[in-house]
Amino acid sequence: MEAKVLQSLLVCNLTEMETIGRRPSGSIRFNHQRVWNQQRLQASICLPTNRASNKQRPNALDVSCSYKNFPAPIFESQSSHDDHMILKNKAQEIEPYLSGRCIYLVGMMGSGKTTVGKVLSQVLSYSFCDSDSLVEQEVNGTPVSDIFQLYGEGFFRDKETQILHKLSRMHLIVVSTGGGAVMRPINWKYMHSGISVWLDVPLEALAKRISAVGTKSRPLLHNGSEDAYRDVYKRLSTLMEERSDAYANANARVSLENMVAKLSYMDVTSLSPVDIAIEVLGQIKNYFRDEGRASFGTL
Ligand SMILES: Nc1ncnc2c1ncn2[C@@H]1O[C@H](COP(=O)(O)OP(=O)(O)OP(=O)(O)O)[C@@H](O)[C@H]1O
Ligand SMILES: O=C(O)C1=C[C@@H](O)[C@@H](O)[C@H](O)C1
Image (cartoon, rainbow, N blue to C red; front, side):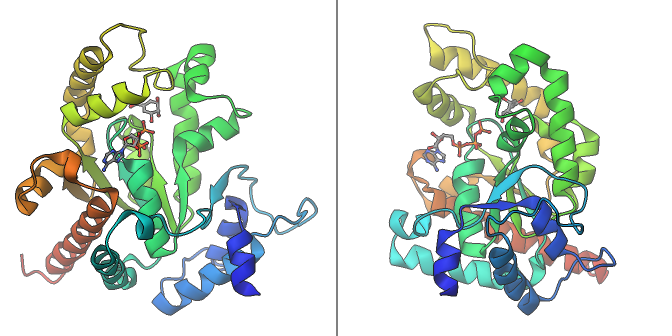
């Protein structure tokens, strides 16, 4: 019965997650076992009931977050049995260290934050949120490209900061952040409530991915040009020059170029989202290891 309820869940309201995820005192529960129980509880309470009259409801956070909303684990259909096992084992290894903290994926447009983020959320039994989608919801479902056009980039950035602020009070979420979120120092204050990981993808690969799907939904890249690849590449290069230092604020970096060298692959197109998710978990583990060494004064 419980499994059925879990399966049928499509959308989980962050307000409720916040209510459950925190003790009345406001402190977050960091016990590993409790995290699992908490997820179950969270799931049962996220049923779409009418909660309009619930007096316990904290500041309305009118955004939603998917919880296990994929028919079957994506990673099971996209990778070998060995890869699942590696992914699951890595997830189990770092869960106690994560202690329910959110994972913020940062990186350029098209770097795979959403694709890899969904794999990570499934294997960690976390929820998944895309901050761009949350901004869209806040603006009555207006697409990001229309928000830029109607209200300007500054308005979008303010909404993005508000969303990150709200998310910083949550836990058990993998957050795919907007590509430019790293540029505001205040956003880092919020993202450092969790663990941040930079998906560092070579510009050629980004330009190929983005020009293949078109630039319409990406206002900072769209100019309706004939040679989409070349234009996207040029624009991405400029953005990367402005942003690389900001991305480097992340707690961990996953460089697809380094992965290709390590795995002796031909190029980054051989790297599956599952390969990248495994590396994300590995780099998070390294971060905790280094952090532990630093706090014990052995560095
Ligand atoms: N490892 C991969 N190999 C090949 N294609 C990929 C990989 N990861 C993502 N993609 C493709 O790249 C495109 C962008 O991926 P995705 O939407 O996950 O990136 P994103 O970082 O969330 O982008 P944005 O910030 O613009 O929303 C998608 O078409 C996706 O299918
Ligand atoms: O790189 C950027 O600045 C952006 C990336 C997208 O995710 C959106 O947040 C928006 O299109 C801006």
